[in-house]
Image 1 (cartoon, rainbow, N blue to C red):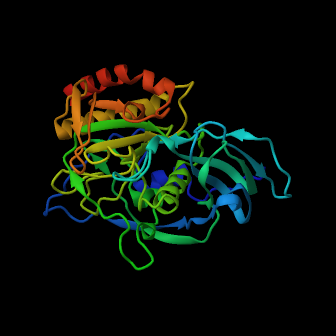
Image 2 (cartoon, rainbow, N blue to C red):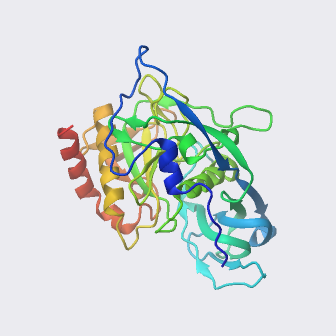
Length: 371
């Protein structure tokens, strides 16, 4: 399979975000009026190219551009889906099992979220693909996505390190978010931000590839799949963490400098746990953790971020709570720090990562007590 050189690599993202390996710089969450405005610079990012196919057309696709990712969504059984890729000569490869992430979407979506499946597959420049779906699958859609090789556009990035309560993170501009994807054709925002006090913190995995060499490109692909294909209007998570331990800003919250929150400290509603989003903050670790744990670097960043959020919202990391969705009144008894499968029928965040949650809660409590 042909491999394409990705235009915005981890190193480029580090430079764009103003981060240096091993740095431990902390800046205030809110800048005072007396502080000078941070300097900025312009970076060029590949514009996402994508095309979505529905029904029978979704199952056999030949693309006009090199396909770096394939997003597949359907309603029905979670098991039994597979994909095989076409190389540049049109030759089909071996069938590969699809492992979906389910039970995500906006609060109030109709239907059973446990039967709504979604998966993003890195395919490394394929010319097309074929799908094999579970018996009885309906609403099948596939999206050919290229976040690597398309024409570029400019993003303005602050040269200062972005930090939330001592946790460095890469801004949306740093990973190359095309903010136009949040808007409909008539110029209105697809999913305007709503804010509520944070009640719980939920851990996810993306069920994607481990050993990702270009997490920023992967996040741009999830962004397109969530915002456009799924019609959520934005990426579904508040934060994402890669194998190197880099933290990425997710859902858009304006330009006040507080990721995932408004200036009053309320949390923006995202789309990571259908029916239980408002007041529930979602963090996704890039990769699949059914039989392996996240890297030590990813685990350390997850601990620091959860500790910072727990401290910011005065949440007890080891508490059991009753979540109450302020939008629809739905309740759920969960741990303060939960896994996606605690909310809905899903394998997320993977057997290994889910099994580590008791130790993670203890580590977060210890980290919070020392901050």
